[in-house]
Image (cartoon, rainbow, N blue to C red; front, side, top):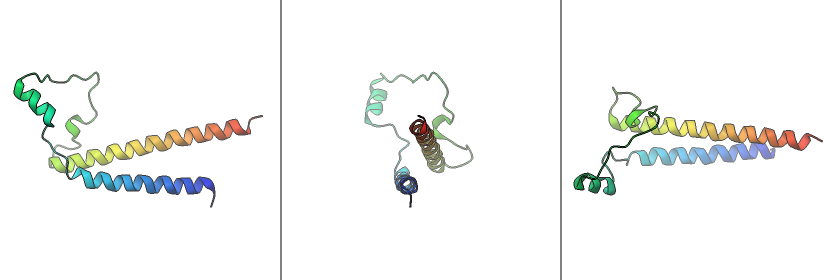
Amino acid sequence: MTAYFKFRHKFFRFFLALFALLLLFTVFSSTLPDGLEWIAQQVGISEPGNSLQPAPFSDYVVSSQLPRGINQVLSGLLGFVLLVGIVYLLYFVRKRKMLKNRHTP
């Protein structure tokens, strides 16, 4: 096995384990605000947040026809897949650049 193949295998196993943890912990996600947000709402100092650009999935919803729990899981999975893809793409580009610089006299 080459070093690159071993790295890809470790990379795949690492993100597969992360994916399993994501599936495990999205079941426990809550739609209720955390303690600090709850207190700010009770005291009346909570201000609605403003974003510079709208989110691609508002309120983490993929489809309005599905139950909220399934939407959260699907949004988490989509975000995870996109993140892994971006990280892998950046790694691939950097690796090619390093190999190109090493072979250039």
